[in-house]
Length: 337
Image (cartoon, rainbow, N blue to C red; front, side):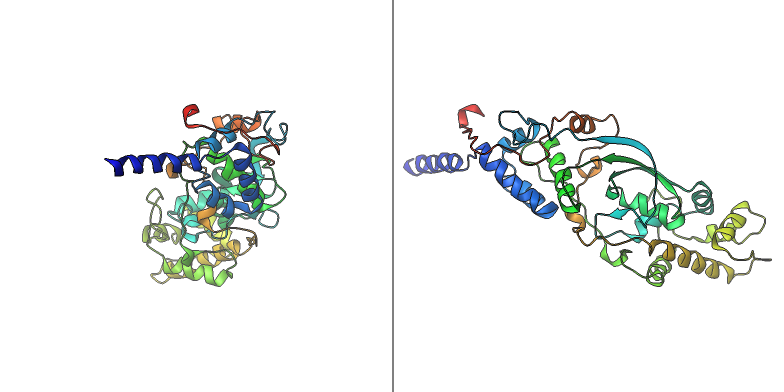
């Protein structure tokens, strides 16, 4: 009985010792923000970052405690169609998976021909000026087929001066939507099929090594599958003319068994050349440290008119440093929780 009382007493003391002031939380978050998305995610997943008081601080940037009460109204524009131009747009993650980039346009003859003629990416991505914040694979999928194409984009003017700080701000915005004690959502990537920094021949080899595989169950078919080749090598099919014009090669006068592999290689070479134009961002963190605006991964949805977007636009999230004024100390007792 005595030992039980002692343990209870020690647990209460431990909990009391783990109480943080808003000043402590704000300064720790400010330091993490300056360290970029890696440091920010690590802090948000730590005991201090999981504290309910931090969650409250993020959701209520009050004038009397916020270090700058006017800096949390974030400008959000669009969505509108933008150029995917790899010469000007820059990724913020260090891995872009080849299979995720080409699964849909290269799953059927119809899908490839449509991607060539429409020159428009699927869905909406999130950018911040010329930085891709979310939707890298939708962006790269457009570049893979039409580097001169367009894609729908929501432009969020995240606070910060560079890639690291803007990604950190996005991580903080995500944390504000989660219940206290919830870890930051994260995703993994397959480095073996990464196309960033790869020469066109390397990417083409990756594609050819995965012919017949279906990396995405929702894709229209396996990669460069036999049925797709059958359609594309048939001069009577409209897809044949579209794809051969895109490749810049003469049409086949008659279909031969070896033509399918020749055509696969030509498509792989073209896509490899297009994807090789994407620039690497030296500040890009690992995939697991990237903000995840994906409800399927446990993150919030960031879209025009959505709850998170409206909260950012109206300054209801303490997303921009300084997060708390110096000298503001509010003790949080167990009775107030």
